[in-house]
Amino acid sequence: MTEPEPSDAVEPPEPTSPAPGPTIYRHRLPTRVWHWVNAVAIFIMIGSGIGILQAHPRLYWGDYGANPDQPWWRMDWAPAWLNQALDLMTIPAGYNLAISRRWHLLFALVLGFALLGFMVTSLLNRHFQRDLRVRAAEMAPRHLLADAIAHLKFRFHNADDATAYNTLQKLAYVAVIFVLIPAMLLTGLAMSPAMDAAWPWLLVATGGRQSARSIHFLAATSLLGFVIVHLVLVILAGMGNEIRSMVTGRWRLPADAHAAPPAGPEPEPAE
Image (cartoon, rainbow, N blue to C red; front, side):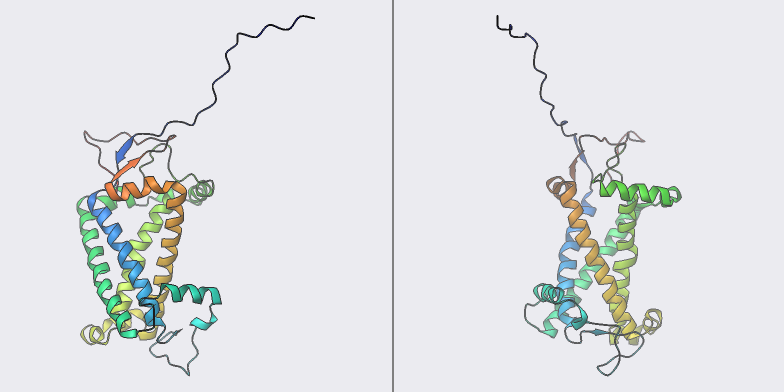
């Protein structure tokens, strides 16, 4: 029996992953500066806020609240692991109400003026109108469901225009910029006796000093939840690419996506 002659057929090449897309300018300088100032300010404010909360770790509604009153939340109701995590985040490491307040008030000013500067800049360069405006069609349940499913499948970018924010991203940023941070600043002012004397309407607007404290806590907790989800999504979307874009402004397009064609002679980078 003769041996079969070797075939001259060429082995097909192994499939390779698509080459990454081009690098584009995505984030302007004001957005990048505001992002990193916020990152530092929020980290310190959460840690110092925990230190302040430890002075009386109970929350009430209305004008008054003290030890004999029934709180709607108190720290010892939280699971032990959560209390341990909060202890690790406290600024300073040991209990010191005076130092916690100083850190908190200092970085509240940083957070407030940074937000004001970002809002003015974003109105002037049309970042809000161009990138964060939520259109009626995007709020349709079918569209929101499709966006949520895409996130569950780790598809975070629109293949037609990877530089555009998706609807859930817009809603999250709008909530942080126009609801959570302003609510924290307003209720923080309402808890200050000096501010109450100058602006008595603060306590009326927030429902009383203890209500202001509770709203302040809920807004801060929601903001912490946003930060955690944001960090997880940054890791899943490609941490190196995302961090580089927020440092240099340059962002590499995903391999299966492209930027939308510019509407004018010069493309405007998304914020």
